[in-house]
Amino acid sequence: MTETETVAVGDGMWGGIHSRAGRRRCYRLIPTDELVASQRGRLDDLRKRARWTGVAPLVENEEGDVVERDGRYYDVVTYELEVDATLAALVAGPRPEQRLAAVAAALRALPGWWGRVEGMIPAGADIVFALGRPHLLELPAWGVPSIGTLLRSPERIPYLAPEIVRGAAGPDRAADVYALTVTALRCLVEAPDAEPERLLGWAAAGRPEDGPSRLPPWMRQVGAVTGTIDYLRGVLAAGHTERLGTDPAAIADRLDECRESMDPLVAVRRLRAGGNPERALHLAHTILLTDPSYELLVLAAELSYQDLHAPQPLEAWDLLERAVRLQQGRREAYVTQFALVSRFRRDLAGRLSDAVDPSFAERMDATVRTAFAHLPADGTDGQGARAHDLAVYLLDRGHAEEANRTAYAWLTGSGRLEWWRFDLMLDYAASFMLLDRLAEAESVTETIRQGLQKVRANQSMRSAEIGEYGRRLNALRHDLRTMRDR
Image (tube, rainbow, N blue to C red; front, side, top):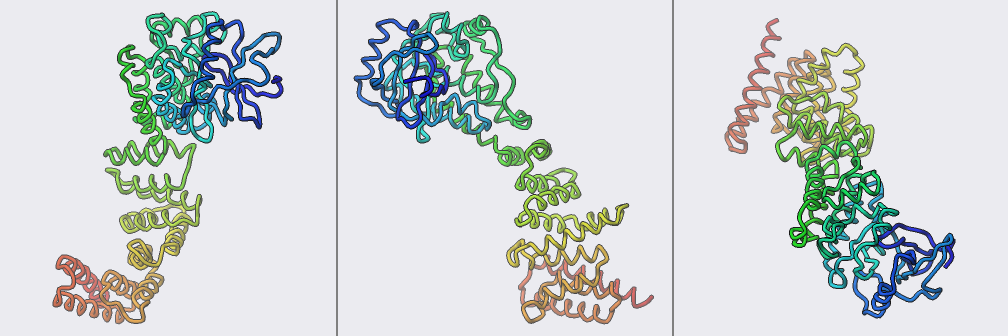
């Protein structure tokens, strides 16, 4: 087994882990001067034991148990397993949610490994993944390497529980929980950068230090994420007895909750559901600076005009335009645009009339027409249901002829006049009035009056709705009389 045939994939608590392309083997190389005869004897005993689920089997190395590298000799521990990735490599990956998922899987496997060996103190590459599952690269419960070895390889020190460093307890389940909790914390914050002696002092004192955050700025504002960091630090600060009673699955569950909140949509929606729309919108804007997504733009728009104490319809409109530019073929933004038009059409129209740049009004008109064209034909958010919103927007903007055509098209699309659609009938009449076609307007208002009498008689519409349409009809007829009398 030459150096060129293997690839170093990380360091464990004891030695370094190497893989070999195309071979169902991986290797642990431990400096020969770090082992004694009794430790080698326990390795021989492990090779004779029955295989265990989730534990890589130890096998004889057909090329010998000792190799020389750069003038130094190493004992070779051979495992029958083709490694896809080490836990250390996954924790070093770019996506925090994937880092946490790998550690959670290892934590859930830990009780099963305890049936085989306790006090393994897994660090770095002692846990590997093959076919998506975690496997332990087993060793006897040797405890920890010598102080000299630790000082030469200080990256192992933070995984050591204080009672292990002080010699107050031997390697046990509490030490294993500590080591994997440190690994979980490394998904979120960097390892400390300090001299080996200082790292050892911190470990012995039971006050581990952390480096800078590994998270994007917006995640540092999410309570579930910052709370998980505090939770993990609490596990590390707990005493030996308390850690002995800690269920690894409980830590894994906490990591899964944290992972869910690393989804921008989940994080924003949870703040919204918790009654914090301002914080939710602030978080959404922070995320959008670096990670603009269609779904988040639509959600932020909804927050802007639906949830705030002082709604911001123009901000919502701008967010929706960005969403449409991002993915023009999707309908959600168009549907939300029309919900916005329905609720704030007069406010939007008023803002447009005050706009200094006429192209702004023209652009919004074009956006409304485009959005309507992309709505589905049917359904509560379809063109038929939103035709009234389009007609009223057009009327408010002074596009009476287009409003007239829109109302007529949706009132007669079935081949007969749908007189019971009183909202569109009122729009139709108003458009005739604005076009100074008063006779047609009066004819339509008469049809509306008769229709309201009919639904009142057969009780096919709620009284409140009939009353509302009646008031709007009276206001329209009053305007018609005023125009007649000019």
